[in-house]
Amino acid sequence: MNADTSTVYRVRGNRVAWRAAGDETVLLDIRQSVYLALDRSAAMLWPHLMAGATATELAEVLTRQGPVELERAVADVHAFLAELEAIDLIEHL
Image (tube, helix red, strand yellow):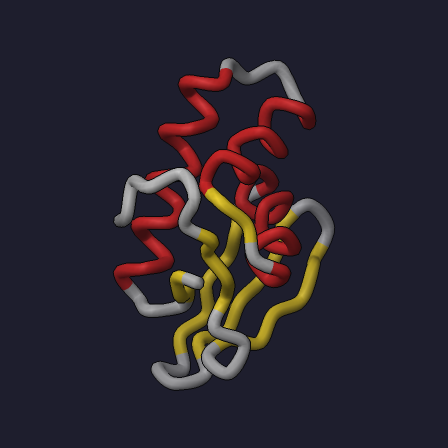
């Protein structure tokens, strides 16, 4: 994953269908026909990724939503982005 804090990440809209289901978000990778479930924290980040956001902005979302330290939020965001990049569901703008 690109560690540049100015990089904007956005979901590849043509690759994924999704729906909120309670505290989770369920994704369908259209190209691979694979379902994915996002936990509460990742589900909070999803709308921001749909619009396009930097890793810093995403970490700030997590710190505003609950008692999580910025260092932990940054690590979690980087791990989440790396997972999405590995399955080619996000792009860099």
